[in-house]
Length: 296
Image (cartoon, rainbow, N blue to C red):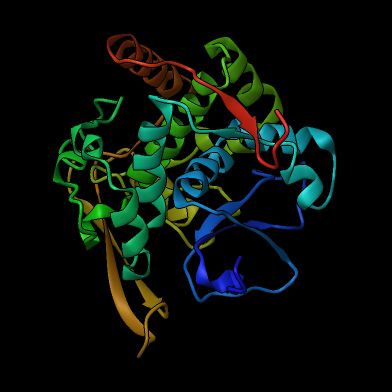
């Protein structure tokens, strides 16, 4: 706008080539400013950052993924993006924004976005799960000025944020819990398979997963089968880390027992109950849902 290039803005980027039979179809993230891309990615620039963050959270949800998956299309472009609604109603937007920003704002490049969208309600938020491996004080420690601790970095915490975003999107769209569960069971068999055999250690780190989207994460199956019944102690693994400037370098990863799995359907039920209670106590409910490009 006004002659400015799109790289002056934070943008919602999505993989253009999509596969309805994959674990996830709609794969998106918020790109920082000054970043460009080639044609394998479809991006949307928004006039205001609140709309960007609301739509990014919705794109992360199983519900939007489900819609895209059912079209059977092989490319995600303007024609599909224009059919997806905007979720900007309260209380869902603020709850979703806290999780969306914490998932995305991993580096200082996102500090302006975090600080512009900051809401004091973020620090009063909490997880809907009582699992002790989730940092109970994560939300309470959030600050208006971005810092390293404002981002979700633990495997289980990032998964929990995505689970809660699924529920928030369903509530904002006026769906029922049974509808959300049915979509998960019927339309996401690969995700269900991966979820059923992904194990976390006592610190919320993935110790084993069959997910093809996470190659090299956790122990190989043979090694994990030998240690998965441990009730205490730790297992270590040496890796070559080539993710930072100056690499590669040797790094030791520790997995602390005991190891266990999560039940996504039970987590959906717990989140649904918790968010429904909060909505009844708060003001404002579903509000309006409008189309991304002006269509209702």
